[in-house]
Length: 120
Image (cartoon, rainbow, N blue to C red; front, top):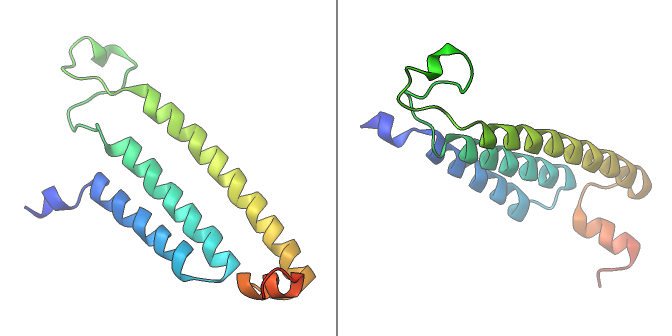
């Protein structure tokens, strides 16, 4: 029973909505960036676990001849690319955050907008 509830799909959906909460409920720039990273981790986990089966074998080696099901390597390759892009995006975002913090002295979105004159 509990094994059916705790699986990759459900954990990924939970991670995604934790990230959505971090983006929507917080005005801190750093927490927003981390919320986006958590959302991305949830999406990657979802795509990797959506068609996973316990009896699937890797698509390499001699076990392919005797296997009933072989795991698909395309989603895994795409998600490795997504991980690299996500890490790069997070690094650039954090670099921009540090620059913004040094320029305006705050981590709050609204205070930055007020200092720039964009928020009335």
